[in-house]
Image (tube, rainbow, N blue to C red; front, side):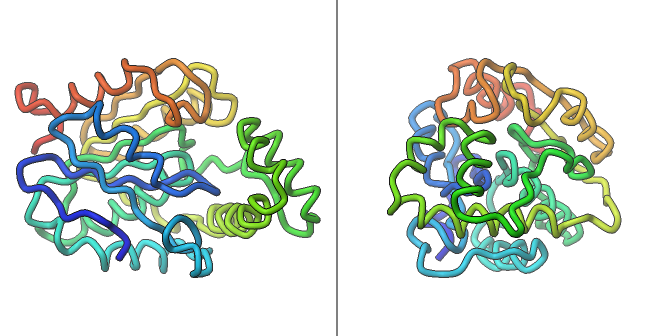
Length: 246
């Protein structure tokens, strides 16, 4: 099962997709800061409790797999949230959901994710040795050095990160179907990967509201978010302003 917990009919169920190389379990650390929201980290193949399965490199097959696990959410209030690569997965998932009556999510939340048409900064891993790949990742995400310096952990991490970047490079939307739901973007003020200009391009991918918020932190601000980030989400899900409950 991709999701450990059942949807909560009394809360907004937020389906969370991870950034490249990561398990989505880090989202569980957010739960105490988000009353009224039930977080559902997606257990993607190749990581976390599903580490025994090979990671997927085909966006269509991956999103179809996630869709097959969402049946229990369709009679509840639910939204999608993705970080970096997870933002692209969440967007493609939202496209598929919005084409089926009764399956439309309340909104799409994007953290640290460049617009899908902007892929210039995706590291190229093809043909690199393990040492070269580790060096690229250390520059891309300096915080990953803590993991990469341990050979055992690095050996688990490398197949996942290579597959995730292959997934991103392989996926080029043939047609950018505009979502009929709001898109809310969150960007770290020191993000040197997903630029302000690139994240602003998400507004062309919805016929509804688009809003981009800058929060303290870098590309990986979601690992230890500033309280203002949680306040922004709580504002969006509050029943009073009706921004997300549609």
